[in-house]
Amino acid sequence: MQIMSRRLLGGLLCLALPLASCCIEVHLYVPQLLRLSECPEQATPRILAVVAHPDDETAFAATLYASGARGLGGICDVVVITNGEGGFKYSTLAQDLYGAELAREEVGREKLPNIRRTEMSAACFQLGVHELEFLAERDHRYTLDEGEVLAEQAGVWDLERVRQKLGERLERGRYEFALCLLPVPEAHAHHKAAAILLLEAVAALPPATRPVVLGVASEGEDERVEPDPAGLPGWSITALDASAGRFVFDRRRRFGYRDALDWRIVVDWAIAAHKSQGTLQMMAGEGAREVCFPFAGGPRDGAARAAALFERLAGVIFEVPEYGSSAGANVVPPAR
Ligand SMILES: [Zn+2]
Image (cartoon, rainbow, N blue to C red; front, side):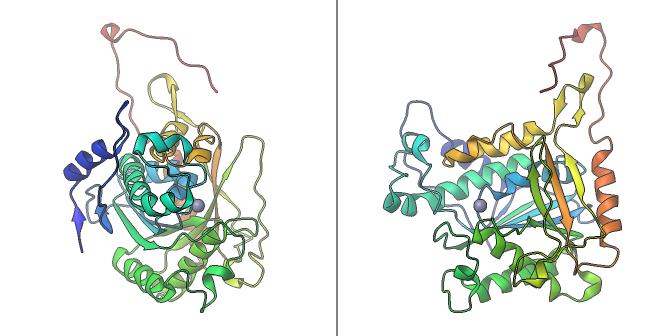
């Protein structure tokens, strides 16, 4: 298995990210598995995120950052099932940056896999992800029908291979938690399929080794996500633990010197890395909370384990140094 070093990756990302007034075509090869940060073997929490597309991780970017190498010092690994080449429609602003007419379907489908892997690598590096794995399945099209992907004869993803890869990683990773996008009927079929495949892979583990799987939704300032506890019609494995309630990471929580910072900063870092995804950029600064819902089939103590994690995440993660008069004191930015 090929693992790219952090230094090499850093160099490649510098090359891959847009260079001012210089049209370059990206020819980077991003391997299947990237080691983006080093973590002690006993680090906690141990979290696996499984997503369908590069950029889906932005829905829980603050949770990843706060939990991982740059926050609590835990291990956060991410598996991406497709290379996201179906996201060509809104690539207009990235066309000149990458030197290709990405918004044209035939060009986007050819060039975007590598570009999106590179952007995903940059996003996950900035979020302190430990390992990033690409399964490189086909991002065939936008649809709400998860059957287009999950029917055994669908032929869109190599389902047997995806199941095997997820199973191997879960066994190897000894994860305490697994994250996916909350599977709701109105979600992209790929998002629902990724969640179902993760839940099935976890259910295949011996009970004592199963992580707590959390479905995550990003919630606006005046919004409250109220998913149907029954889960997706026809997919009982997606039923939620109604008694567990919801676990919230508030991106607006302030920290740092004079409480001048908040978690939306790192979410925006991740969003900005995905420059080929135009509509995602419109979400910068949006999303007040990352809300997690445990699934019904999880460990009996799943809610208690999730509560303990979110209590850790709500504590002090970054100590603020004492400053003397030499540091000066500027005006604290107002709350946004
Ligand atoms: Zn997506």
